[in-house]
Length: 260
Image 1 (cartoon, rainbow, N blue to C red):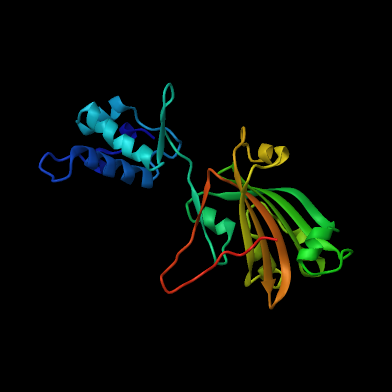
Image 2: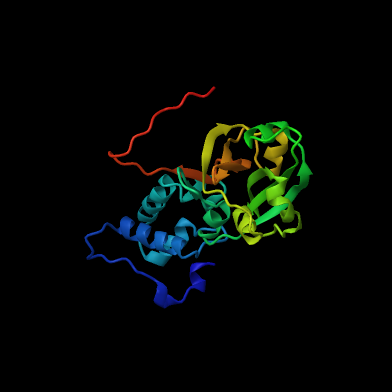
């Protein structure tokens, strides 16, 4: 959508009598427009267009856009102009969360493409789930997408006696925990996670549409319900689309844990 597509009543002209500098007024209004999704297709007005829209100098516009660039909201490249950066998704540390909801709460549509689904044997997953190596396990591997853009490769293992009915689930647009609740199976209420930045294997990089040596977050989760391990999951999340957030206070304490 361009500025000409927006009714004139929505425009916020700059004020020469405001205590805010002109560049700050332009920056604030551009942030408002970005928040409202006006530039959702990635396009962004040129400096000349913004100069005409706001009735300010090109220097004023460049300062406003420079500050948007500094915050990672837009990117300016020679020959390509200015583009809106893809939405970043935040994941909280130390809490139970759903990737599905983290994506959809931003307004993006999360969908999945199933890469593998079935009852399998896997010694490493069995050890994590504290069952015998020959125990049947439910396995699902998915490519997770946000607005059809690859976001994460997700591989989850659960005891077959818990998750076998999920072989019949429609995984196009749903969450694993929602599906467990739907069939009356236990849903993890506690667990451990290990977060490591890595360079993905070539096949995973291809799935995520990553070029060169782009990094991903390798997230390993062990979920428990009633003390029983019921989920072993490894998720590779694009490092350019995720950031992890942790809240802390002076009254809380933590310590480094040695990695064996």
